[in-house]
Image (cartoon, rainbow, N blue to C red; front, top):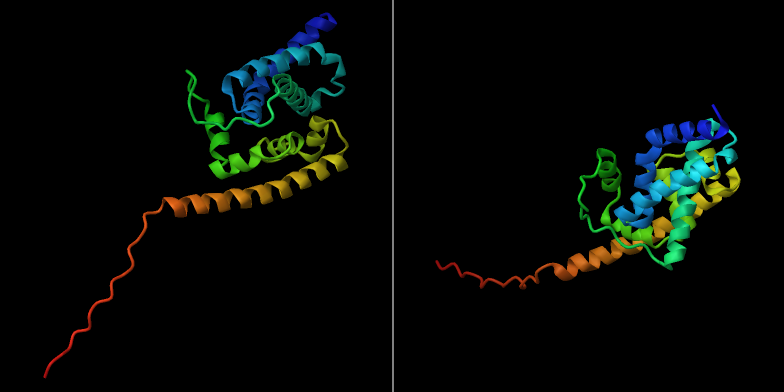
Length: 196
């Protein structure tokens, strides 16, 4: 088997094992299912082209997330998209996989809006650690930084998320209050006089 044939076989195996989770990650990053599907394919094409950079095949998962994350950021920059478009819940012709449904339902609307306010790097770290369950070392590899730097980014991301979530919850509370029907003040009942 030639090196290229071996790389192809390995990437095909990686695709079979990881394409659904890479797609879910890109859906969260991009908020566009069709674009996420395209970039999932592009991620694996890039993985094939960069196969010689995969030092340890047992570390392929974070390596793929690193490629996917950089591919998403490159696309966002290319399109000059500054913020992520919120997910509307619409299906674009195909039913979501069970994994997609579970991953999407793990985040509330408030959490989605708060997540969209985070800087790209913090959003990536939070999604990879909390939604896709990457370990500290895998997160570091996916972000292309040291383990210590990855922990620092994740800590900042969690704090930013707490603050953004507090803002979103306050906005929701105000919106709920504004939508609540106005209640008429309780009428005072005339006191009954009990006669003898």
